Amino acid sequence: MAALPHSPIGVFDSGLGGLTVARAIREALPGEDLVYLGDTARVPYGTRSPETITRYARSCAKKLQEHDLKLLVVACNTVSAVALDMLRVELDMPVLGVIEPGARAGVAASRKKHLGVIATVGTIGSGAYVRAVASIDSRIEVIARPAPLLVPLVEEGWLTGDVPRLAVRKYLEPFAAESIDALVLGCTHYPLLADIIRTEAAAVCGSPITVVDSAHATATDLSALLNDRALKNPRDAGGSLRLLVTDLPGRFGEVASRFLGVDVDTLEVAQIDL
Ligand code: DGL
Image 1 (spheres, protein in one colour):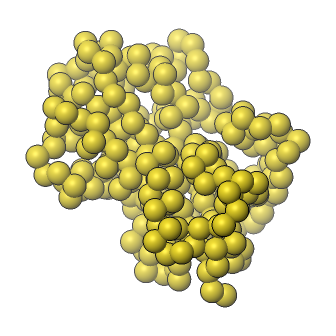
Image 2: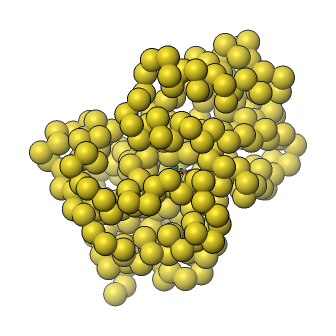
Image 3: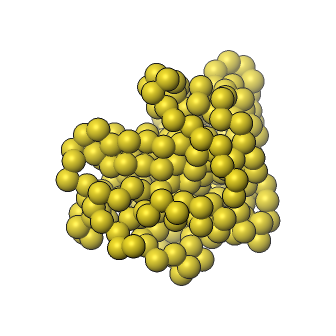
């Protein structure tokens, strides 16, 4: 079926972290209908091999295609880093990832041209952020490091207090010697810890660090893409959000309502098989 302006946009992530991207899209484009798939049965992706991530990504995209999408947003940094090219070749619709927008936001934020990136092991191992930044401005030095434990902390809803603070500090300590002035949160989950990350980055580096995430930059790119392709929904408010998960929907609904700032009773969460 041909993509039409009133068709929904698919968004997928390994779990609930991609809701940070869905939230940014809803803020920027409140008239769009979104179908969000969180592969909660198989999260995390960030510690898995490129082959497994590619296989998982293909099955999520295939499932979302059943919703007659006009466009797919890969909210997961790990999938964007490892499997975006495959999805663009295999799917008959525009596919937007989060690495390029995140890299562009980071480049814009770093005056000293020393940019830090934290992400999953899979994303860092792929070299995707380093390549994306180099393609925008080859004079920028990228210091990219994994921060894997932050994902389960966010999944557990452990967003404040000593435990996330100590984990963040441990991961940021190596940046002390790097004189970065901006840090890209290259993982869907990290924006939920942005306040702690900002505070600890400033403490470790001895000066304020601009913390950027790819969610807002992705929403801006999405808006431009929809305009370019005449695919923007003419509605300017009231877009719907359907949530699909691959494991128990109950807890996901509760956490999602907090992420999105909406009443849990207004959320429709369905469990599906891939
Ligand atoms: N969604 C993943 C990412 O942005 C983080 C969670 C995971 O490891 O699956 O890289």
